[in-house]
Every structure is written in C-alpha cells, then in structure tokens.
Image (cartoon, rainbow, N blue to C red; front, side):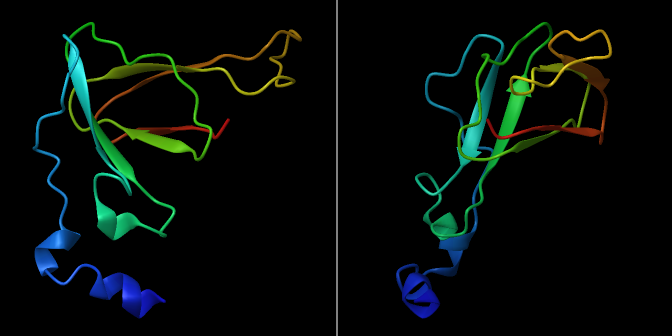
Length: 115
C-alpha cells in the first residue's frame, strides 16, 4: 500500500535527491546524474525519474533510445544542439525519414519520445 511504501523510508531526508553528487565513470566532456528508482528509492512505483546532465563545450551525449519513457531536455545554461529521429514511418515533406534538429538555449525545452 502507499502507507507501506512511506513506512519503508522513515527518515524525511530519504525524500531529497542531491544532483550535486558526482557520477561514477563520467566522460571527458560531461556527466549525467540520474534520480531513478534504483538511485532514489522514494521514486519506486511512481513511474518517474529525472536526470541532470552537464555537457562541456563540444561535448556530446551518447546516441540512445528511450524504451520505457519519454525524456524532456531542459537547458539551464549555454545552448544545446539536439537531434531526434522519430520511429519508422515518420517522414518529412520530401517523403524521407524525418530528423528533428533544434538549438535550444537557457530555459528552453524539447521532448525526446519513448521508443
């Protein structure tokens, strides 16, 4: 039950996640710090999570997919060039596979869909 879940976390500080903690094995030009059910038990059974990414100049996140959920990418400082290829069958006006490219700046956001 919901009450049982809260009883498993008796200390109020167990409901705070610190994104300032360093990531193990961070790359040369950035890092991702993830709050998910594994790293932050307060999220168990909520279906939610959050990641803070720090990418240095000319840095790049690894190409990846989102099999379980969508991602919302928010920039708080600098700018970020994003590219997303939607699922098969999503075509551009010329009938080719669509690639969505944007440059987002501070406090702008773009979605990356599940799949």
